[in-house]
Length: 241
Image (cartoon, rainbow, N blue to C red):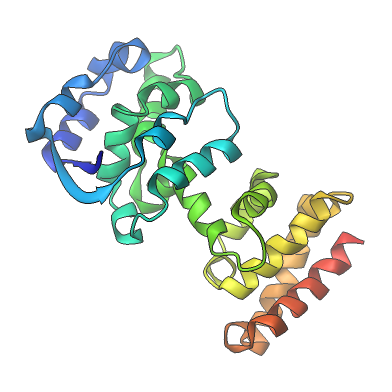
């Protein structure tokens, strides 16, 4: 199976007709999208169908993150940033997963907003963080950059608390600098196996503030990886104790 992107006109039609398609979202299908070559563009990048179809709403985000990365792990980030890929998957191959993981509200008004959030996504950040399928891939992509632990263990630490995860994602200096990210997730992984104190909201926020101050004065991104990870470990260790 090849990666497919919905055509822009189809995306607009779907977005504009969410309310009239509520029954389809709740219990029907959008099989016509997969069966009509004029509805999508097909790229050369392949998808592992077995891994893709193993994604299910009754499984943890951790398991589904691993499966989406098995299915699309080699996806170039510039393609992953195209929302039309994720819109295609939430309406076709992973429609059942999407509505099982994110049950649609009974109120029609709430349902329209909910569908636009989880079956689509608003803006690049919304697509990456709120689209039911895209969020799985992007969390895996972030954790796969960690240099000192396997993907599953990094994801386990990253996914354990949503506010900690959001705090990492919202700080580009952390999520985009491999040595800093590796140090933070390494500390979180140790905390997870000890007493989880680093996951306490105020503790983690204070640790991140201190780390940001150090980053501003020491330019962590230009230091050797091992030195950065030692600095991060030292800062995080004070708040884990």
